[in-house]
Image (cartoon, rainbow, N blue to C red):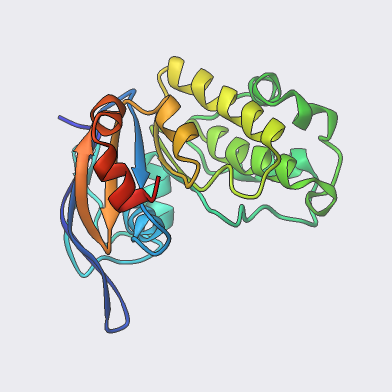
Length: 232
């Protein structure tokens, strides 16, 4: 059984139909990249999985249990974590307070030292308020808040967006280390090269439809698909 099995997912914003019968699966210890142009439905897919947006129809089975339609906090308790594109850290709290707060309701949690080993910069900045962190540090903290809850699956929405190349390099190294350690990840990312460098498989969305499912090697062997749906 796959860790995540999605079948026939349809999601609307009001009367606007955004996702059309989206089906996908994610195996344990796998990294899946979800690619597509702006407005293709990638972030909506992650929000539908996490319960931020309630799908109109379809099935989402997580670790064997149906979660479609459940509230976000219940899905989080089941072991899924979404790192939003806008990070959503608490700016008035310092780094360590953000981490401790995130861990309070977790049934299993990473020790703080493991977080700081993963993100040494956060250890240096542990007494700094969220509003005093750089964009890269805020992104590290957003990912760390998800990891401290020891998730079965982590959903990363545009983790490299707007960051300096050196920060992207460091965050990519962290993602590769997490993957090597067996962390299951779904990543939405406009930096196609970065996403493909860590992914085992990839899906492409176009106007809310899945138009490709395969390995990064399969995708690179089909430049017409890269050009048609990703503009590269």
